[in-house]
Amino acid sequence: METGNFYGIGLGPGDPELLTLKAIRTIRQVDCIFVPKSDSKEDSIALEIVKEYVKGKRVIEQVYPMTKDKSVLSNAWVKAAEEVRSEVLAGYDVAYLTLGDPLIFSTYIYLLRHLITMLPSDVIHTIPGITAYNAAACVANYPMLIGDEKLAVVPVTTDINELRPILGTFDTVVMMKVAKNLDEVIKLLEGLNLSDNALFASYVGQKNAYFTCDIISLKGSGRGYMSVLIVKRKK
Image (cartoon, rainbow, N blue to C red; front, side, top):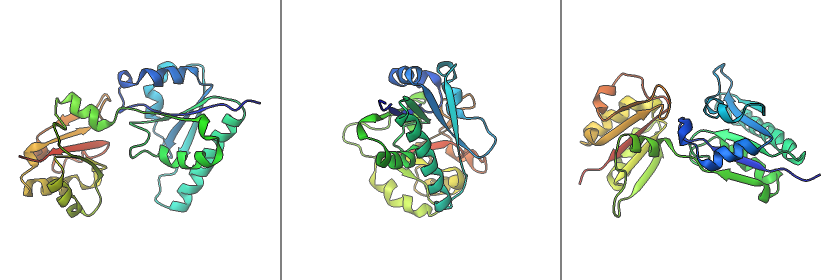
């Protein structure tokens, strides 16, 4: 029996019109679709984005536990990879859907690490997607880089002071995962006189998208979930 193909597909930030032609063509051609989902009861955002193209296809939802327990997470990823491998070795072409770009802060990477050890490399294909920060900058007409400027893309950790040298070194800093620390980040930007040089965007490409350059107004708003913060250094 001939082995099928696996496609990890980046869907972009949430707007179906930001899907690439390659992503749409692949979704239409595959035999089944794997859709990641948290263990909450929320519907899959990924599936909603491509619903027009998956009608009649076999859809397999993979539920991942919302935990930081590495052993629990590892077991979940191994199980998910084994499910994918089983379909591919049975001769099916399968797609795995993921928001944004598959290889930038994506849970897809954990699945890919296991699949690389389970399947021939020539049947594994990753299709890029537009990142939330690229989409946000374009919506707001916010130039990210020009000339020889440097860019940093960083997750926000609990130690906000780790951002100081980054903000002092790079011309543009993209901050991801700001949800729990938004107020502290705003305070830092105020202290560095950078609060009026930033763009905040949440739920980019989705119906409840929100954009603002008035960063101070976000204090206490709780708007950090599914958001990105882009900061330009003054010259």
